[in-house]
Length: 360
Image (cartoon, rainbow, N blue to C red; front, side):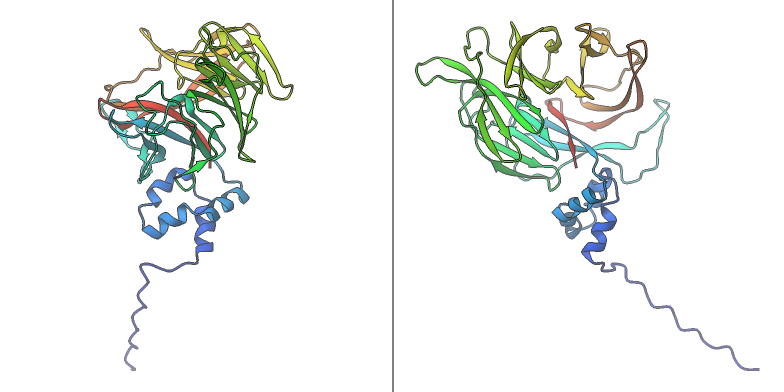
């Protein structure tokens, strides 16, 4: 009887197999961007790959672009702002929170590693595609409300890097900005060349050509009418003062005086436009008030179904929610909370500057 043959040991697998970048990009492009902050921890080369233009070209070709939430926080008065993005925890398994008797969403706000982030103001931040535009706000203007500025910078949400953009054609004392059809409309007061007084000016920036242009307007006088905030809806740009609201139609090149009730929301970060409907959220003594503006009745109405939405914790905790909205036949809008969770703990000195959604 012949003795059994000795089997040779299987070759040891390579713990770090080298794959072509093109193959890695093809694979990563199919992964939700919610996992990218975790994937960036793998290695330095992986971080470079996640920020490469080739990856986002592949995501575009594969129709894998998605909406990504960015949050700008000023953690302390002496610091420049910090940026965070919503992501899934490394272990995507949902955990059970016995104290609150609910499942954890699995989401957190991850800090975006930016070496030098410029100062910002909430009213001067807008999004076009995958870019966040910071209109104005240089290091010298922060804390000096009467110091004008004209510089513009762009935060690329794909590579998480800042770059300079063409400056405003005039120096403005603060900025209020909005976006219509890929163009950024900006207003606020500037110095009148013919006098020592201030006047309102209206400028537009074409993000495709990267060129500024002036918007002619009959509302340049600043007496009682300094335009402090703006919004864009119905393909029009609305600018607001304490006494009136005016709207600019870019297609017709025409200004109109409109009802002021629509722009009665209090904070620049407490509103958003979803599918051409204006929504507002405010804290009241009763809790959180969710409203939408009915353009037919010209009045604010409550979003139904969210009356019992409350959050726990202290003012050192940031909470995030995903709410689906439904317009019903009786001309009401109902909201349903998909998930609602604590996503970040912050210092007591923290100030929320802006929440933005980029398409990446």
